Image (tube, rainbow, N blue to C red; front, top):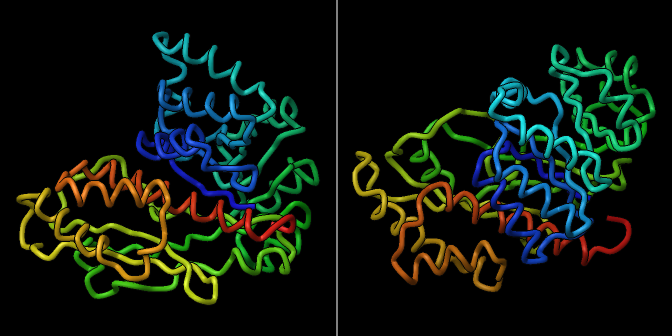
Length: 310
């Protein structure tokens, strides 16, 4: 199984919601959301999974954003009550980030003991897993290392950041194609129930965006050995932040004419190609949404084709 780990920004949530509504995800893919703030987009995304009887994880103690703090505001009372009702549904699994030990609610561990998912990627948090969780969790997301697998032995999912992030988008011009991951080929034989990553975003988190000098579109694809590679389609006129629409056309034209992608027809890739054909710039958030949709749909199709062992 594949557990894509996404922060609850608007376009990440919309990517998940649109995939579920269009029937492009199955039980082979269980997304993990680290909510950033209480919003209707978050609620509607979770409801879409509930209505389609698909599992999704929401982190109960997020380490980024202001979700827990904002939920306490008086004007969020309606959201809070609705959210608590949603959490009762069997489709919604409860995530505990053991790396963020200060915000762990022990009552949640007891209340949702039958549908816990833990995240433990800091060696200092391993004793906390033994103390609070033991063998109770449905899934345990850990780093692929003996330090973790020796002590967290049941229901293991390997969590690794596979996105090779650059400081500037223009830096991707020098690395147009590279290996992304082979975890989907080996996780089962290495004793894991599934694999997890941060999709084409990476684990680094930043609050807001800014006008970039370069626009880069990150698209994954399978090579002839079924390894997942990633292409970085980058604009050429990167000396200033003027004309983002023009920069997008430079980048998307490379995607539209890419030989390795010509036979791939995911929803996300089709939407990107339509932007090229219509000479339309949808905005950076939508571009990211389309790239995420492509990645998750591609992995879903792979896992279905691989059969029961996935």
